[in-house]
Image 1 (cartoon, helix red, strand yellow):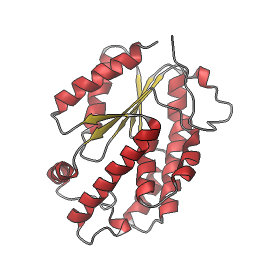
Image 2 (spheres, one colour):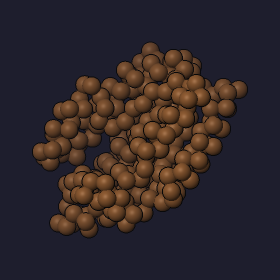
Image 3 (tube, one colour):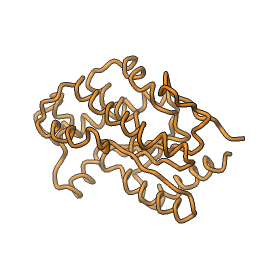
Image 4 (cartoon, helix red, strand yellow):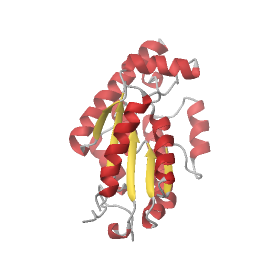
Length: 231
């Protein structure tokens, strides 16, 4: 029997959960967790098998993504402004991509979802109850997979890919350490703890992504197939 979608909170006005016939699958994880690589593989697998997909992710809103990127480059955003900026980015994609795609029966793959946004804000001292209310507009995904990678491994992967560590992904804005390497390790450890805290409430699956890409992808395909077949 097909499972009806529902929202975490108040939802979106005039949107009926029973009209959302597609599947929403979120892949969470830090930069360097292999998240985007996995999604690219999953999209190819799903579309090759004749299942249409739509993709969303952080800073992809046509409304605010460019402004958010510019603001972050200045490194002057307060934690509340940053939180609301990302919430606006999510809300715009929700209204214009996620909901229409679900209504059309698509499989929506989210390259990070509200859990990353909440974890980032929690690490920066934002109130979890306030965040839950803020993201009450979000539909509950059919499946959420958090790709867990040890901070020390994330450092190596990010340096190998970019030859540097990102300011925000290192938590340099919250003064954990003056050394970006040390700050990255502390910030990613704090993010991991925030995700484990959220997992107690949202019950998403934690996937060991310290393994090779193919091993992780094989596990994701198996779990997603079970979700899709649960009609």
